[in-house]
Length: 572
Image (spheres, rainbow, N blue to C red):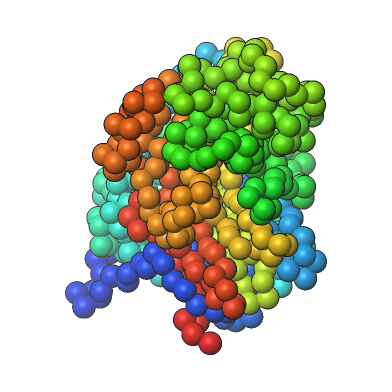
């Protein structure tokens, strides 16, 4: 076990001064010179400050992402991973960066077999080789103007001075109370006095501030083969259990050589044409771009689009996702996103809901009018509901949609001693098996399939909209529903985000929020749909170019405590 230096204070929690007033998030902002939307006020403020200092969208996105590692530590952090979809205005080109975590070389297709999912989550075994720092480094070197040290400064300040604990942070801590208590380092940081920090108190993480400071000084090699990497590997191999804990926390397989071998990757984006616009997304190992894109193609092939059609298109796209998409060669991406395949699949959408489960199609390049589907559907695997998403646009017209995550709420629950950072449990995104032929079985160095779907929409070659969300596999349906709301149902962007949601992922029942059930249940049940309540689906952020240089940034008004939208200047 790594023992932190005694002189280091892990967390400090104090009541705010009596005169202090909580800062308010604003879910919609319009203006000029750049814009940002995140789930967190401190992260949005950091991004805007970077833009006002002359930084570009990538600089601002990395700064905001690092702050989210402080204020949203159960959803993101430097020991996690993510995906960026970025439009470079100077090059007039969309780039994507894959910073997804990887499996250690010692992992095999049977490593997770027989392990209860919850036990898999809270373990060293679930920790993937982190990709976030490599993602930040590649983005800044290739597209940014700030150094990593500069981009980390706002996060260092927030971690040092602290942030005000809100209800969401308290609730997420409380939901993890039992497992956090069983990890000594995690309990020390996030359970001061044995309980979650109270709402309204100030939470500080000086160890994370020091970690960011050292990372800025030493660079990514400090993680990918250096001392920080050694400490992460030691923590994975010997999780710091609280004395007397009876929890079975399995050791992991990560080695320092896995960290040395890690690379963030530039990949080609997915692209579909939809209602005369171009929609770009993230290619495998994410299933976001392919599944959102296929569903949009199916919808475009239908004579009319409403909520019934949205649910059915999503059902079909998820059937194909489960059969074909993973981090492996031979994913038939071109055919999955082809108009011919979409037309073949769209003929299955009728006046009533199709039988469950929908079978996958055959994206073989030879398409018939309406063939009978064959094959076996793959159940939707468990995915952590947390993750976070942000969007940034700058004054030069660069735009980025960025999903970052540590998977489940609180990751694997293990804080690296002396470093103030939670490890991810990303490897539980793999199929546990046995599942012969499943494209998402684990393998050495493989990246688990993701549902993250950062998305950019273009009209006549110019960006018009950026969107994304957290929420495990509901990310895909959240992004899809926002696009349907905006471009099929005629909503403006704030309404498109705020509208009640439903998610159909080729499951027997469609999960839906209460407001959706109240408004649409009767008419959709008459068409054969079956529903079950999901209290909250997604926590989206988006922005739209509304003309003459004006940008509208939009975050959630209430989901996950509401988000924060900001602009550089409200007027010219």
